[in-house]
Amino acid sequence: MHSTSVFSAFSALAPYGWDEAWADEFAPYESEGLLPGRVVRVDRGQCDVITADGIVRADTAFVTPHDPMRVVCTGDWAAVEPGGNPRYVRTCLPRRTAFVRSTSSKRSEGQILAANVDHAIVAVSLAVEVDLGRIERFLALAWESGAQPVVVLTKADLVPDATTLAYLVQDVETTAPGVPVLAVSAMGGDGLDVLVAVVGGGTSVLLGQSGAGKSTLANALLGEDVMDVRATRDADGKGRHTTTTRNLLALPTGGVLIDTPGLRGVGLWDAETGVGQVFSEIEELAARCRFHDCAHESEPGCAVLAAIASGELGERRLDSYRKLIRENQRIVAKTDARLRSEIRKEWKRRGAEGKAAMEAKKGRWM
Image 1 (spheres, helix red, strand yellow):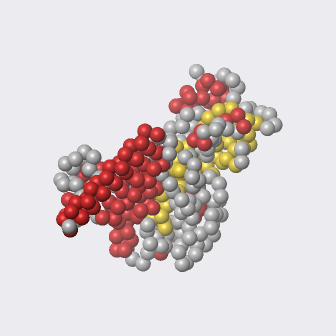
Image 2 (cartoon, rainbow, N blue to C red):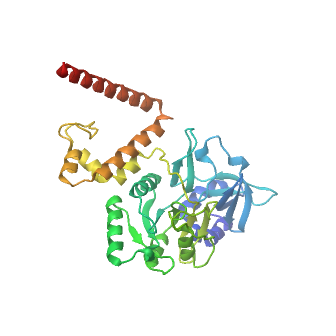
Image 3 (cartoon, rainbow, N blue to C red):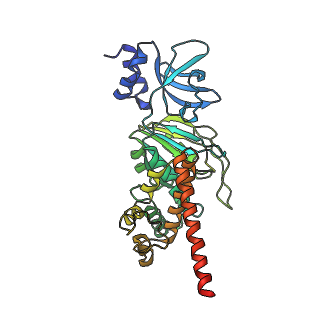
């Protein structure tokens, strides 16, 4: 049985995603007199937490581990002290999902962008040429997080005609198997009704480059100008970071939205499963290759190369797949000694094969 305080949390926190399962997770902390709440913003060792008492400012000193993957993040559910100056977050509940990218530093660290997310909305501006490779990168991280990705093509009103727009949507759909692709005009409202229905079913994180129209999209979903919006440059479609922190907001039509700053870099972080999901057609072809360790480069009986030759698979798609697989192996190898050793052995094997091939050519020339 839950106490009156936890039942009151249902009415206050339900719009932010609180449910029976979270209440059960929180039960051990209820007996300690702590309050449940969801982190709506994190800033320099402190965070804003929405509780049944409203938004409270809390210190994270008690939950600041050495592991950067366990620091308090926007979207976390926390157990907060009922009072005090300052108040403290005592613990965070185990995450259901987490959107993680590698840091821009040379250290082997991941950075959590959002926690307990159901949908990862990748915003892509149609004001500039669509970068399919970047979309694939975002989708790999989204699938790996455990969330359902959704690609939203923003600024659809800038596309000159419906035929061109349909072509762009189809091109992205081919790049994003199993992912809904929506063309939206936040200014005119076109396509917003479908997106509202998607985000109404849980917590969504809004991702994309600066200038992708995320803040305008967030304002359209919120029904008011909450997020600052600035014009993008006409030359390259880039904009300044109008959102500087990750903010969690309850939507008036249901659901929760986490808006994030524009991401210049989107490095993979142990996303092998996510990469496989993005390139599912290549993974299916690879299963039919003659050799189970086929590198899809020059091996006989390679089903992937056969698909390239027949036009079933595009070369850009395979190049992107290879690039992300290599990148993911490098980041995992930084923290996985066994994999690091396997990669070195593979490098040596390929080097020896290349040397042998050169020697064979020299023999034919002499």
